[in-house]
Image (cartoon, rainbow, N blue to C red; front, side, top):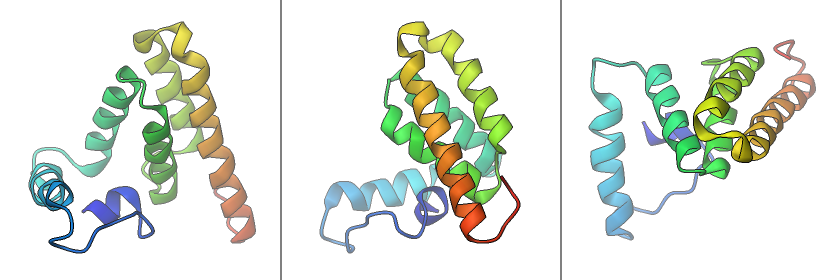
Length: 120
């Protein structure tokens, strides 16, 4: 599940190298993200809201990128998420929120063009 959420190139430790990472994989990604009542896209939207509220915009940018890469959200939907969250995190943070959403969209569109896709 960790790879599904963060991608195949996401950093990992080998089992036993980091107690924190082992615990995170087991509890957060092994149990919480796998519970049946919510699907991954719904959970990702919840995480996006929390990350925005915590002003964790770099991690939020990763979530935007992964949502685009997996097809969970379109570019229009990422923009709508950013607009919706601005009202809750406040306009002083809106520049960073807008920046990471547009950066994720631009990277996705470049990747789609270079792969010959027309998802842009």
